[in-house]
Length: 235
Image (cartoon, rainbow, N blue to C red; front, side, top):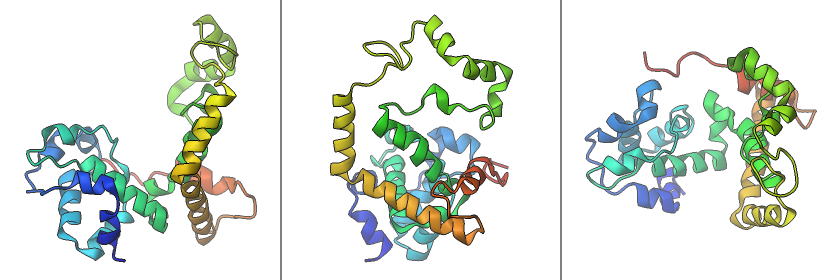
């Protein structure tokens, strides 16, 4: 099956692309386009053209990973298109085919899966205080480092029930709720997608000269997390 045909199997693509006339309003309203070298209008135009080579290039590019999925494009498009939904379908297909490992931002999917994805399934949260490791987040400065080192006391003082039983912010999520989340991922194929991301990332790590003997292949993960070619922002 050709790439365009595979995209059409995704309900998000079907709902996101009606009849783009390349007016550029989606790009004008897009917050990501203001900062990144990113053009939603161009993406809509490429998929609408059904050009297989361009679609493949798009699936392997950084471009599809810049979108914040805020759906501002949906609120302004005169034809009712939504580039954000198109992006979702493109990202999903890129992960399914392993094309995401061909771009710098795409390779970061492994980190997102292991941090945000696994947090959601096993802890019930996207991000937790213990994820904000100072060495990986130098932008937080000395204040962020102090908060990280004293996080239990800090969150206690602001009345957060950090890792505690019962109610309150950052509370421990009950097992029955976590079981429901687990079932959602199991039924919808979320765990299969996790496995695909791990599989293709391991192949990419090997091809880039990183060791994949360790299941964690930490060096590759650190590389994807910290590397920036400096070509993502608008000139």
